[in-house]
Amino acid sequence: LSPPGMPPQTRARQRLLIKGGKVVNDDLSVVADVYVEDGVVQQVGPNLNPEPSTGLVVLDATNKLVIPGGIDTHTHMEFPFMGSRSKDDFYTGTKAAIAGGTTMIIDFAIPQKGCSLTEAFDTWKSWADPKVCCDYSLHVAVTWWSNKQEMETLVQNKGVNSFKMFMAYKDIYMVNDGELYEAFSFCKELGAVAQVHAENGELIAQKMLAMGITGPEGHELCRPEEVEAEATQRAITIANAVNCPLYVVHVMSKSSAKVISNARREGKSCIQGALSPHL
Image (cartoon, rainbow, N blue to C red):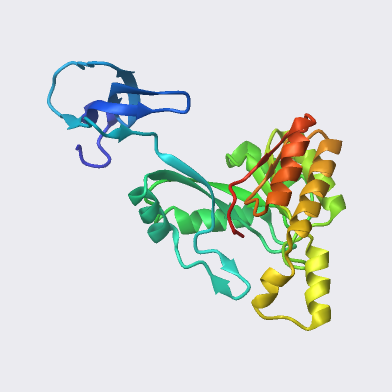
């Protein structure tokens, strides 16, 4: 490879030919060669013969699968939360991702209530840039409704195209129904993806506190399936009122998945995240 800083016109091309593997795409799987130049797939087909020159690396992928790198759309690297912090930082987390075939993550910049969305984005970016081992991007959470300017700035100047709203974590990240309506409306206007963490934060807080349960066991006790299903239905109803497509992240119950499935059959624009316990 040419030394860093060398002008592009004098830098040696990086050329890779993957021979004879089964290429797996979303629509079909087929035995083919893959030719990659400077990190970009240039050709996929049988018996490729790119022009010979120095620097061509050939990999024999016979009897192996050749798959696109995975994209994990929901991660939390070195996330500060309630006096704790995520175990993985942007180095260890993305190093593990690469080892498992994930070549991009989308993490979350999450401001405290009353704090700047753009400053949160810049903070997370400052954590990630020196450490990441793979491509990454950032969603931004709207944890309070201030004004539209920051969301617009993030979309137009920072490359952000998705915003997450929490319906849980009362007094920390949770927004109320009116704020959801405003956020969904502006996501629609901006052409950004609206995401929602669907739980009933009011019910969660009131039920456990009234019972005097403040330990970790309260997390499971206050989250029966119907709580998530109710919040999912409410979020879809609000989003549909402003004709905003909605992504319900980390769906954790059959009841919630059924709500989403029914809404889709009715023609409402909503999708569900992977079934997993997540923040």
